[in-house]
View 1 (tube, rainbow, N blue to C red):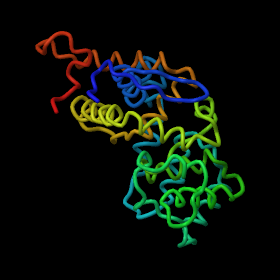
View 2 (cartoon, rainbow, N blue to C red):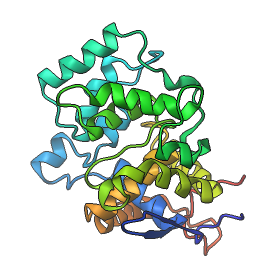
View 3 (tube, helix red, strand yellow):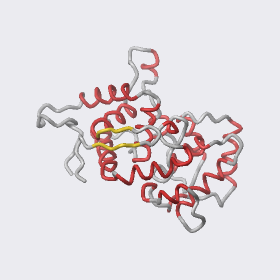
Length: 262
């Protein structure tokens, strides 16, 4: 597959979203780096609008498994946990050495969709996802959205995010398998989106922030559509990209100044 800026993918099942590489890049850059109106009080004090700074970039450490940082960071993605739920999560993380560690599990998009539809049992890598999911969601106050936000923060290539907005795009019980299939069918497109986002981040944001991998990029695109923020994010990202355009470069490149040579 030869990926160009006009190449498209379709994600979702309940609702299908077809997006070009160019538009996806603009939306995700708008999400990560778009700022509020600097003339407003909020804009002067804390200009970033969305959860890239408060979740994706926040509280990163080198812990070998889940840590308190992942629990705290989930609040930056609106997990809504209170102190009681936080303490339950910290208790199992601190005191249960048998809690699965996903470090050796293959990337999510390399797993079997069938084994993500139903637990294949011990001995299969997908079983580790099912097991850590069950162990966290059995805690009082920890629903699927909270568990996914905690686990994804630690292993952003291993565990998919899910919440009520993503449930408008994917079927709840089938979401893991459906997301995996969407990523598998167009893997080169997602690899290119990852690369272009990071190229922009390094070149035009002075390396600020962190890379985003395809599980999170897909989540942002699905959330933006379900939450009806798509046009706003597209506008923010377009303005940021337009401000980086180098007029000396060849005309006609729709993402001038961002797409680096392979």
